[in-house]
Length: 149
Image (cartoon, rainbow, N blue to C red; front, top):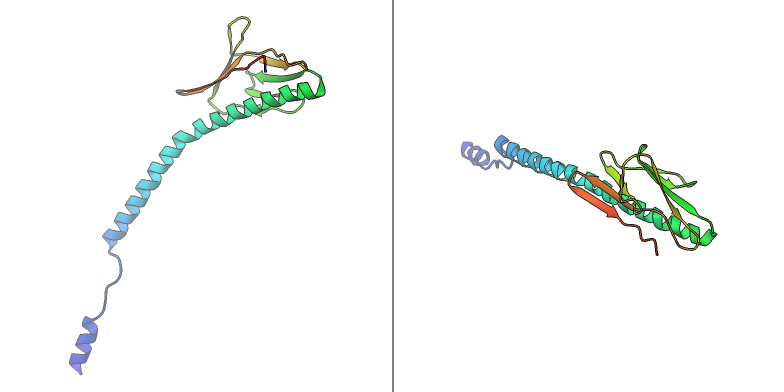
């Protein structure tokens, strides 16, 4: 009878993990999550400036279309002091934090960094306005306005 007990005790299987194995897995998970957070933290501001540039371009196209459809001038305004932009009468949006915004006026060639800068779209297709420049760290996006289109 003792020999039967001995064999059943010796057949006990240890299928668990050791403390060292668990600590190593937790270390690698923490390392991967930490590196991923650093990567996305650097990517997020760049994505916000890209989204703002696309939104500004869309609003400009919309203001131009409204001017032609309604046969009345429409104004897209960039308020550099309050860091907002939008079509007059349709609301405004804010620029992302830390984004530098300036406008290059085509008539004078000056860089405008203060005040309100209106871009007027006329019903017959003409417009006033210059180049809008958004910059964040090393990234710069230029939105060139074509007065002919």
